[in-house]
Length: 115
Length: 109
Image (tube, rainbow over all chains, first blue to last red; front, side):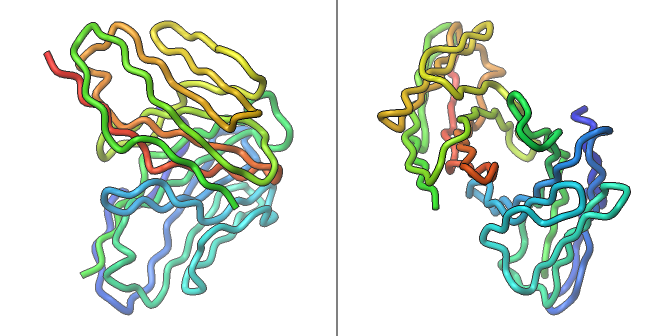
């Protein structure tokens, strides 16, 4: 158990709908990262938050948005869903800043299926 | 941007050694990580290199050459449970961690 909690674990929805994925980082971690992993593809970096502020953005679609709240949990909002958005969405946390290794601890992921 | 290359698949026999190579090009460098991921599961941290040289951790070792943009992960005394995808990841100057597509290692009896 990495200490990172993601909900829901599984989600099935229809095209055009909107969903929210939630992530609670490990206690004490200030950084939250979101990654998308489609079938047979690598982890694609979406966005990084540190202590409530956006730090870096990857290949995140305009239909997707995220935020990190004062209690450090984060939400990833996916709207106008398309079939191609079906993927495993991982949240990861780290202490953040210029720590020794800054390794990321991953949650179990939220598997989104768009029908 | 970042470009991270690693082989797609490797197969080895139980008890053998396998070396997974990773080459990268990045704007700014702040460390290289190796993660293990079993199918459908979360990636788990294996190793971290920020200086040139070899880091050993039990059956796993990782090597880095920053001047060559090259790293490898060495898995020794392979066990069936080592069958997984191994992800090379590079942290850039902005502390963004980008992953390669992963190398699927199959261990055969």
